[in-house]
Image 1 (tube, rainbow, N blue to C red):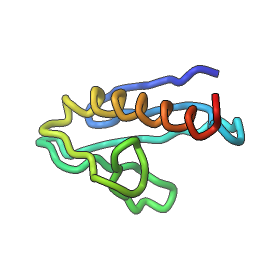
Image 2: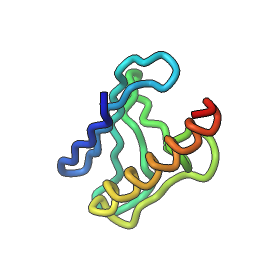
Image 3: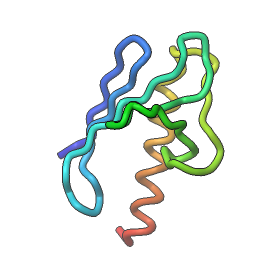
Image 4: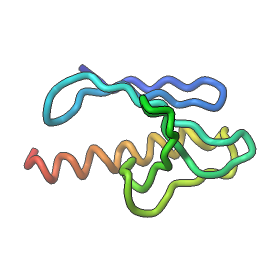
Length: 90
């Protein structure tokens, strides 16, 4: 199934298939309205920061405003998919 990106107020929701398991996964990204670090809403409600390539380690992503969030998530999702394809040999 294709990746679906939904944008509303301060949230960007990404629905996509896991490249290894094939299971559908949903991730909600958000940032403060006036800018700051990009975070995810995880099941434990810990709100960890998101790094380059939508990874959990590396340089933390930040935005100058919530308006910029969707563009940053799209850019980093492309980077993430590119890395996955190289690693999986596609």
